Length: 199
Ligand code: CO
Image (cartoon, rainbow, N blue to C red; front, side):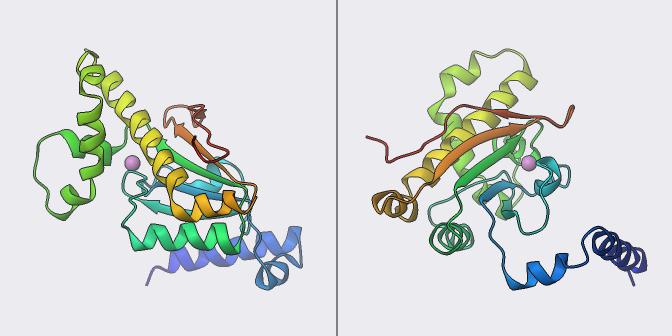
């Protein structure tokens, strides 16, 4: 079963060992990533690939529509571990244009459980309704909602107690908001970086 994937895996491990014979031994002993990536589950947005980082260099959390919901135990566990134990220097929330999750949040169709998961995006929509409804072009409006969602998630991360406590004890930590474009493979920095507790 899935023999092609197992073959891929063997070839991949072989390739890495050829360029660095101790690579896996070193990784086994320790991971010390500087970055936490909070991104979408979308198969077209592969975290390590986009920023060209090796195994061990990027701690990754992905879910539908790159949310950082303050009540989600999975996200909170990743956040606490990466901040308190790994002591990452940067947390990057990465949305992407053309996000199906963001679209599904506001298209009025019922899909089941996912509608509840996507509820925070409908809140973002409500909070920015005037700005969004003033955008006539459907794609442009969607793109803006993608950006506003990232900005909201950056706020969630930056206001979380784990992050606030890290700043209070003088730990160096920044929270960034990016959006990835599927059409050219490039990320756009939304320039909403938070480096210390908001006043
Ligand atoms: Co997506």
